[in-house]
Length: 238
Length: 305
Image (cartoon, rainbow over all chains, first blue to last red; front, side, top):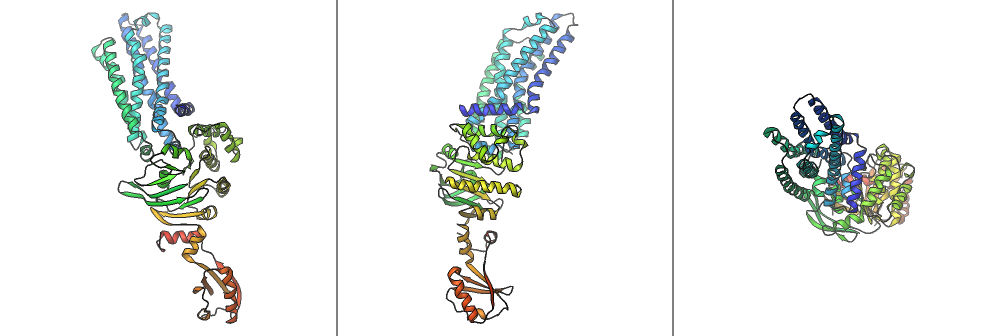
């Protein structure tokens, strides 16, 4: 556990000093919040308050996509960065286990993604209350809260699991990044369902997606840990 | 300290290391020489428990490879071909990270010790990315030593360094000799190997020769004395009739005599030549460089082990 913690701190220190990663992690949620609040403000001209509620609900879906996108920036940097700096071999020469290394890389991406997403969500609610008024917040139902606080860590884990799984098999981590971007698809599912069915968020759908993500995430993580072997990393990561 | 028996590594159909047998005792500086692509780095990676052998066995610092890999990694230090430092972290943070990963008891103490030893203490807060090549190499060497390993693997430690930085690194390696640490040194720099290593192995996928540099040269070329004469006297070599002379030849007007022990045989040789009427100006030993030996072995001019 101590090695895991040491490596986690190292990953975050490096990320904090990397402007590209920092920008991706901090700027993206701010842009999403800005767009969402701008759209809500524009929607205040609509006489029907239902239109504003639909806009509010659609904006909330951003916080279902963000936890899948944000960790990709960190996870890919933590792989590409190691390769670029040729730091992998000295790191793999230490007594750290493959699982510790995998978990450190994964958690270093998942934890900030979830925290930033939740912070972005809080900022969005605050901005909505200030700019539009408190009535929209009353439409924030339990399924939404479950979805944002419960599903987002699962989405982040799934996304990172896919990135690591692909990276440990691919010879090019950048190509792996592009392929890993598909991991955001589960985050888009509610968006597609709600847009096409014009329905409000439903607890059964949230729980179903949660269950599916839990299973898919567990399978992906299991495979990723199994395939994340130092020899593979050393000889295949180019 | 390092023993390997028939250690082999294949990558698909390619054999990178072929049945390598090694026995390197504690405290020895062992040079591992070979051309690019010879399998030197693969050998280090196997011995440092980074990649698994396809065949054979090895023990490093008493730990069996494949069985106690974590323990092997705990007991060896590896200086990779490139320093591999975290450029956005300071020298101090780079070393502290590895000291903690290696589970060093008092990491701050060891980090300070090696930063001071390698004269990097004043730059401890500087980012590794701002360091010169020589400083990075010293920092990487410090990292490899932090956990006081029994065995140190150095892969091309002076490659790409300017002469001054290379000398600093060589001096550091020389200073480690007194710690009774086993040093496994991969290098292209034959002069460096000649000066630093107790024994060398010449390697090209398989082991070609192993021994101390001087004995290898003597084994392959014998010891030769060059006699400078005022006037060359062709035919004089036929009249020498000395039992210890194994071979004579004229090279550039000088008589080159192969013998086994020049220290005792040279005076007899000179006396005999003077008796035969030769005007001996001076005699010297024909020195064979490690480079000659290396090139001859790589080109297959001599029988290998």
